Image 1 (cartoon, rainbow, N blue to C red):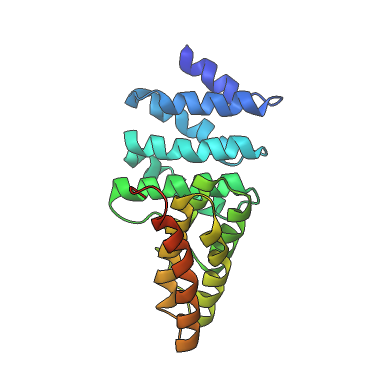
Image 2: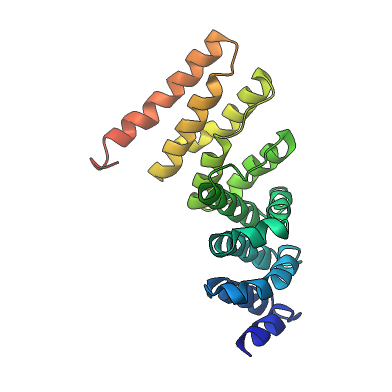
Length: 212
């Protein structure tokens, strides 16, 4: 009866908050027999017109993978998630990246599938993401291999502004991305210039809490 109530709430058309909460609650019930009833509402939620529902559903997929990975693979949820990397809402993109990173850690192989197009959209989403969303996106970017030196330089240029962020986690994640991608640059002068930009934020971090 509880599951039926949640399924009905997940189809409630007037209030996206109710739809999102229904899917989130079903994902938190860690009972294997219930998870199969979650698949249909979760698929609908990933295609929902409201970004709040989509971003909630993205996190729910990673919870479902933790309980029943075979079910996620069987229903091709990971492919649906990869398509959400091109979503127009920054929070949806950030949550999708976070969920795919978590799934990758559980399965032991990468669930992230970046290409030149999706990388551009994911980087653009950082401008409107929370600081922790930015950390997830930056950490995920490290797994991407650029097509050429030009693309690598473009990514570095767009990530460098994060070096001035107030959150040390964002700064350190940005440093990781820059260090990874300057290896693909062909110009020694460009490499020197980008390395110079890394020094001041790292020195600033050293003057903060000893732990950081």
